[in-house]
Length: 173
Image (cartoon, rainbow, N blue to C red):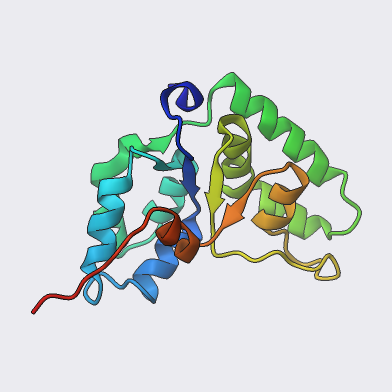
């Protein structure tokens, strides 16, 4: 599937942190079911994620696991050649970084994050994450926004996504 050709509007790729934070905090499934209905309606239109994010969510044992299972087709493969080339470029950059500990590099490269960045680079997509740009003096963890910035990939949080998509959750009694 070539999303760049199929979609003229912005494409958004959701990080694991968006789903987990929504479930645990602002958009708890019992408190704000409207968020989850909205997300279900957005998935496959302009909002996607990647299989690696789905795998991270499926490692849990909670209602998010049950929620995600019917939407597997909206979690894109990272096996395509373009994404793999971007992944190799990102991985090489990470490996050669001198600002971070080896343990931070290993942690970053073993998760979904570098694949999410690679897929966003390939699609020209915006990454939606709750991670924040971190000062390089914090050498213990590599953050999505830091690496995305280096590859000219836009990162926003859930609130910006909701604004971009004009989402409204209206309470009715």
